[in-house]
Length: 424
Image (cartoon, rainbow, N blue to C red; front, top):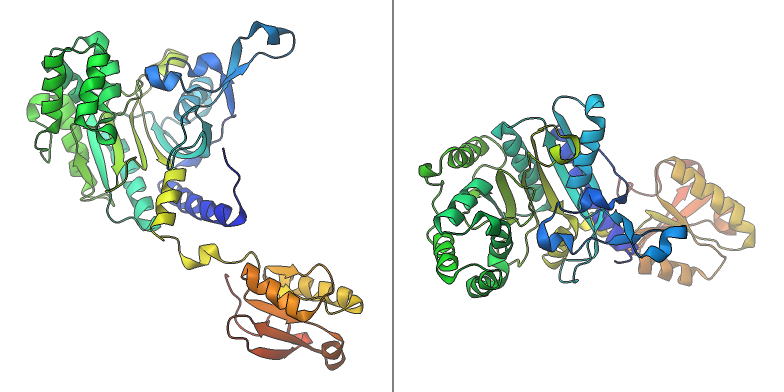
């Protein structure tokens, strides 16, 4: 869990702004949920490993001594969405499309791009089993990544029923499917040999583990084997429809893709970027999750982009536009002496009213120190309104990049401000 300094916040706001804009262009509505959920809402939804990472909140007051937990910090944004839909189904449209950008918490071991508190940028569609849902979500995610400057990504696609068929063909008992998928989900992270060892440790017979890995590590076709039945048709249909969207050429059938969360029921997706040890995001169809709360079979599909990982990669690759890292102000108004304070404050007020971001140096000081301060924080222009300027009815504007100084009539400010406005 971290502090975010001003430069960090500006970069985060930039990425979130892109995500929100694209999601809304695709017709998704904003939603927010509380940081805390009842613990029974979250438990049993994330598989054996996910369940261990839930931050539990002990009972309070007279129940504190029991050592029991009744609340928990949300682990993701999907299960809270399922709860919301179950509680408010009558108030929501038949096809409910929402996006949600909020922090989640996991008691995980911190690593590169992985933290215990982090933001997820989720988009979900409720109420339809049509593959158009997956296609629209994949297209939105693809458009976001392209706008942010990613050009080397693919969106891996698989289906949980195809994985089930693979495991059954290898002779793995149904009761061991979930634990096997947890191991398979680590293939790209720890490698084939380590996954094989983990599968043995999870009770999978050596011959079955070998058969599964050989099946998943072979040549990857463009489309799944038609013998896979409806699941294979579903994946092929999604890939074909994506060719009409922004995701054209980006979607790749990937038999080894597992996605370890236990609530997935159909198509599953994940963003793959070369040379990254972790995905930038993923998701899939979870038609049974909402029914856990409502008893009603409500189809649903969603995708989550990991804000923190995107920010780490963009920083490492110098992908942020130059204006994202600009100063918090367009201009610094100096304080020449005690008599100039009210005049400088009035100038700052006029400039702000005209739309400029203006900082006022908080105390009278030598102009050299005030110029040095402006240069240090990256403010591009400085306005000087000393006694001489006031007598002549002008303001001195200094361009901190070129060093050039110009004098502008006071009545011309605003809107002139000596040159074109910046960051507008």
